[in-house]
Image 1 (tube, rainbow, N blue to C red):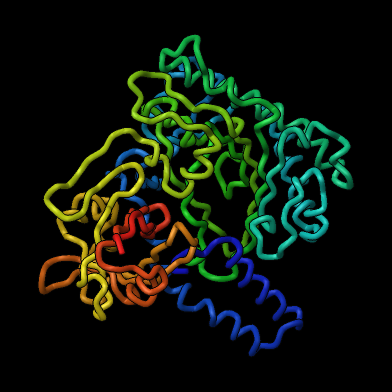
Image 2: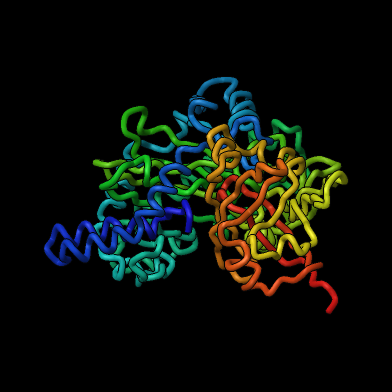
Length: 460
C-alpha cells in the first residue's frame, strides 16, 4: 500500500540484503524482491518528508516535530517541577524528565538484557511465556518488539530461559510504575481534581505492561525508512531509549489519547515516529499506564467534550477513527451535497450517475475540502493535489479492510476535486455501488488515507 512502510516491510528489505551478503540468495532473486517494493519506496520517501501541521487542533491529526516543540527537560528534584510538567503536558504533550529516581545502573542493565534478547532467534523468543507468546512469523512486528504484561514479569514461572531478563524487569517495572503514578498524581492535582474517579486508579499491575523495542540498522536511506506516525493509545507512557548523544538517563514522558480525553483536551496527545539509523541499532523500553478494557475513561470536568467510552471501545474504534471519533460536537456544511459529521464520518455523499460513469472519478465539492481536509495538509501536499498529476492516496474500505489506490486531484474545468485513477474498478465495482447509495468518507492525516464505508443502500 502507498506510503505504509511498517516494520514488516523493513524486515523484508533487511532480510533480503542479509541473505545476499551471506550467499543464501542470488543477486537476481534479491533484485526481484527489492524491485517489488521500489514504487512503494518512492511514494513513501515523499510521504515521510511530510510532518503534521502545528496549526491543527491538538491531537486531531497533529504530529509535532522537534522544530515545532522542543522537548522540555524537567528536573524532578527541583521545586516547581509540577508546574513545568503541567505546562509541558498542555503545550507539547511530550517532555523529558531527569533525576527521576530510576538508577542509571538499572537502565544500563536493562539495555544489555535487550541486546541479548534480540540476538535470539524469533522462534525462541516467541515460545517464551514471559514475552506474551508473540507471533513467530518472521515479518511480524514481534521481530522488533515484545509486549510484556506486568503479571508475567511478577510470575517467575514465566521467565523460563530468560531468567536474567526477568530479574532485571522485576526491578525496572515497579520503578517505572511508581514514577508513572507520581507523574499522574501531579497531572491530576494540576487540574484541581480531588476525589471521585482518577485515571491512575484505573491502572494496576494487572493492566499495565513493558514494551521492549529493537530498531535494526537501516541499510537504505533513513529518510525513506521511518516509522509510521503513531500516537500513544494509553494514559501515560515513559520511554527509556539509547539516545545518540544527549542525556542517556533522561526518560521521555508522552501524554496519551486517554489522558487527553480525561482532561477534556487540557492535556495534549501528539503523534510521533521513530527514525531509524543507517549505522546504529537502537533499543528502547517503554512503560505504559493502561486501564482494563472495561474501564470507563470519563472526564475530570463537566461538560465533557467526549462521549462515554471504555478502553475496549477505544481499542476497537479509536485506533481506526482516532480520538475525535468520541467527540460530542457536530457540524454540518449545508452549502454542498456533503453532510459532515464528527462521529465518525466527515463526509457523506449520495452517489450520482456521474460518480459511477466510465470516467472513473468521484466528484468532491472544493468548498468542503477547503474546510475539512486541506487545513490538515502542508504546502507540498497541497501543491500535488492541485497539480494536473494529482497526489496518489490510499482509500481503505473499513468493512473489508481492502486498500485501493486512487489519485486525489483538482478538476480544472470545474474547480472541484476528484478521486480517480481506479475509483470505478477498485471500489465501485467491488462494492457493487449504484445511484442513490450513500458512502461515508473521512481523511486522516495520521495515516495519510481516506477511509470509506457504505452507509446506506438505495432502494431496489
